[in-house]
Length: 253
Image: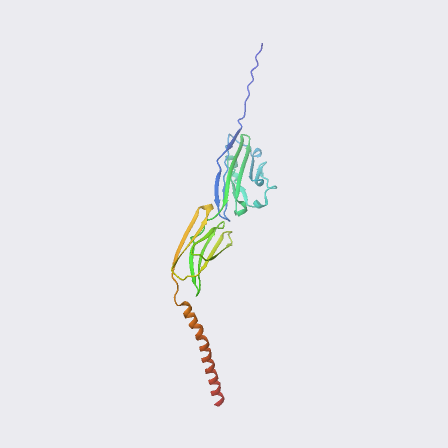
């Protein structure tokens, strides 16, 4: 009986999955979505496939040795590029330019080559810290208005006036970079000494501010205003009398 020996040479096929990266970027920034894959021997770039995806949206595709962007999502058009000179060294990282709120999400990098498959996840959060909040005070005769202002942050924060009881309104507006400017007003009556307490939070970046200011009633404000208002008719009467007197003198001369 003749024995036949078979020698089979197998090419190793591997599937590499790395831990998820977490990236935080402010609106308008450029970010690097990292993705590395193992290189065994020499690679033929025409057999290499790189695909970046966010949910069902194609972010960037590369195969047959070049970018293939016909199916790229509109939100990413003209914003992405690979490091093509580094692809054959195992670098499939993607640059996303001018990040906007709609780009927030989880990104998947898929790489297929002769040696196997690689998958990598990157979680992108669009956020920016707020400047140190400032307080200002405006006194009127009957009321006091305390204003908190801050800027350069994203997304919108939570503003809570803790004390005293009053009416409050918070408004936000976007600047040219896509960050928010926040203004919050508390209006209340001030008859005794009061300590005003306000909190501002941005949970996504674990920002938390507490601001306090102690205010004293402004005595004599309304009395001075009333005296001023009573003085206006007297001044007008005096001016009218002088004008009439001058006219009479001109006519008799």
